[in-house]
Image (cartoon, rainbow, N blue to C red; front, side, top):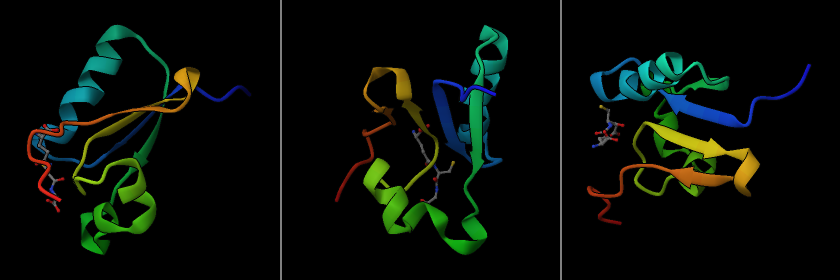
Length: 77
Ligand SMILES: N[C@@H](CCC(=O)N[C@@H](CS)C(=O)NCC(=O)O)C(=O)O
């Protein structure tokens, strides 16, 4: 089984659903990781390495050198 190029980290919130809906509508394959707010996983060091904003969603494109996409407009670190 091949690994999808796209890896979405998200949670079931309004902002979290949006990229999931897009990927489904676009018919793209993706791996999904559920980020558990209850365990503060969005602030875990491994996640902050991907997205220093500490928020979901985050999309990683493995086919493009692990290019990371997230909304940095609220980035205040
Ligand atoms: N404008 C950003 C908003 C991201 C955002 O606010 N995410 C919230 C959930 S909707 C979050 O991760 N909150 C967790 C936290 O701030 O610790 C986007 O749509 O990507």
